[in-house]
Image (cartoon, rainbow, N blue to C red; front, top):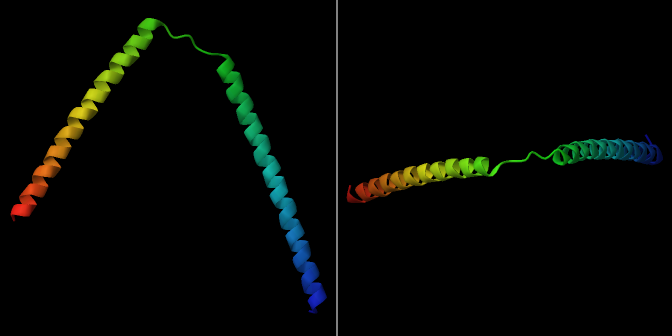
Length: 89
């Protein structure tokens, strides 16, 4: 094959890839637009939460955070103790 035909094929291939890429970008943009419209629609149907429900959620959060804090401290103490024992060996 001569150089001109190779260049033409290469150029045509690049053009096809460019067209496919543009189609893919357009498709992704359309999907994004659909998702954003769905989110916008859902946000307009906001749920009202009562004060008592908020207090209940905060109470649950407090219990969870205390649990995590206690268990994290225990694990940290165990690791420090193991490291100390390893230094003695």
